[in-house]
Image 1: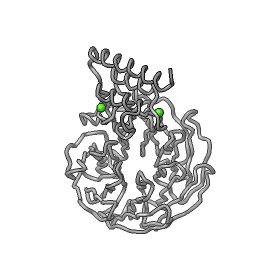
Image 2: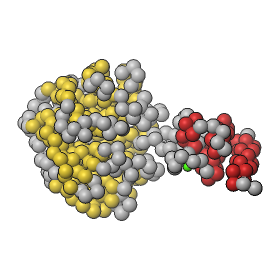
Image 3: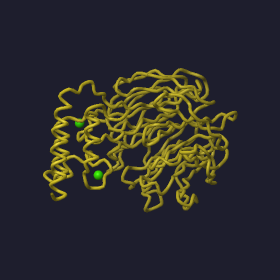
Length: 409
Ligand SMILES: [Ca+2]
Ligand SMILES: [Ca+2]
């Protein structure tokens, strides 16, 4: 028997088994991405179920939690604790919503980002003028990289080759800022790019073509915010877009089409079309919008409305529909919500349409692709390791997802 006939025989047997087992399967769960919001004056993180927009957990962390990032596998949330008493990162296990590790970093950590491969977390230490590199397996600091003055937030290029660090310079007066570009394999700063005043937020499009930096103007003096648009290949600002007062953070939708910028002292969000780099909408949100993040499906963005910079005040999160550019929900959280991260989509083997279920027709399509009777493009999700071929193991993984559930979230 040839290999191809043997494979087809096994696939035919598998598809019969699938059909029989599915006839008795029930109660499959839908993937539920969760959003993690830091509450600076509550010393806690609120966990929002994005399918219901309800707060499902509140996790105590260190003092003055600032930024939060979630590993690509969705298992851990890294929260930086900016308080002088802490200068640490709390690692939250997202399955239990408990802090499982606390890692000491540099002085006044404000920003955190995780490499696309999930192996390292980079933490920007605002008073330390440095970036701490944490190995996520051992949860220890393995390197410290000197950067510019008052590093605030950071982002990785999609290939993980570079980390972009926004250096705010100061939080008090308008001061021209810059971005340090760290080459991740050597952990050296290979470029410094001048931007606007007091840059804080930084995000890079999924295709790596453009970086967006939100320039606050000043944290203490409300003033005109702007966004610097930088093609990484150019290594310099190509376009500057005027936005609202005190621009803080920027989030880009997964399709790369839209960039959302929070304007802290305008109580609104500027929506930039990346193809034209023009503002296509301005969305009123809560008071003092600061952190912003897109859901993995790109249908909604989540805005942390901090309310006040210094006074402890209960805050909330605005949910913006990215089709209508309207707020569709407001969620009460803790005091002074500051930054927010939404779990990435966890790939589900065999879920061709990404709805969180593997149906019989999706399994049979997978079998047809494996047998060469349907194109790979008909369901890339069946090729779980993305190597171009569909193996029996991948079909069985899809079968397991059909019988049980797609992986959490
Ligand atoms: Ca499906
Ligand atoms: Ca494969």
